[in-house]
Image (cartoon, rainbow, N blue to C red; front, side, top):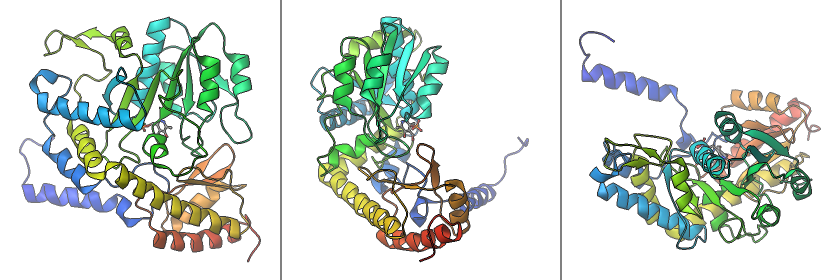
Length: 384
Ligand code: PLP
């Protein structure tokens, strides 16, 4: 750092330069991210609450009220009864880690069972908490194989993690069947970091209950900074039995609350306020429309890919298209040269496209043309 500060104008120029270097969702060319441009009202709310620290809630009753408001809206999305409660966290990673931390400290067991499709944050949490990973196989639809779970669930199980909206394919584990096996034997945490703001608003009735309607579900993670259109970092962890938070409580004597039950100490309120603002502004109807629009674009891309002779990994339930390819990483590279950001799925080997609200139908049409050209050149499909 220099001894003297530099002028405001220079700093603003630096910031503009950095902004120019970044990619932006609004260009509609990012199909490899689960985040999107926050809604305008979310930005405004975010900017207003920058100084608030929810880690010291006694100073901030207003922000605390906003957090309660968000949790109550998310509870109603997840069909949660009155007793369910939780708090806002920084993302799916922290929500998953906290859920497993509570499980470990409550039943003092070591094993965590999770489908091989689970997000890598589960492995991070297992590593940090010194737990033992037990990977459960997938069925032919890339969802958790309940027969394999049954075989592997032992008396050492602290928790089972099921996913409602997998990162690679958007698949939903058969959570009711998983709960039948798990109930009374281990915690059952549902990672709905991505699916949480999609599944409640789907018209598609293919998805069986996956939330607090399922009696054995003990906790659910839902991210606002993905399909919730909130700003980063926004996520919620909800617990069927909130008294379990006592298992991770630590004294915080110099603060306005004498015990902390969150991983983070200083906890920002900006994204909490943003989540409150965007959820109140959208309502169920707003989210239904956003999800319906994303699914129309998803189906368009899926149909175009099939029309070129490419095969889908699964029929998309959510706004993710995974196109089977022998060398998806080559397609990612070739598409990047044409200005598109995409990603790969590993199980199965596929080009992975996340169709977030910033991807319009017009952009999808342009993308489909480039996808055809790239797939033909790479020999993934015969020239049309
Ligand atoms: N869980 C799932 C299913 C995810 O898709 C992701 C991220 O994409 C996470 C957890 C981690 O969320 P975050 O990156 O917000 O920590």
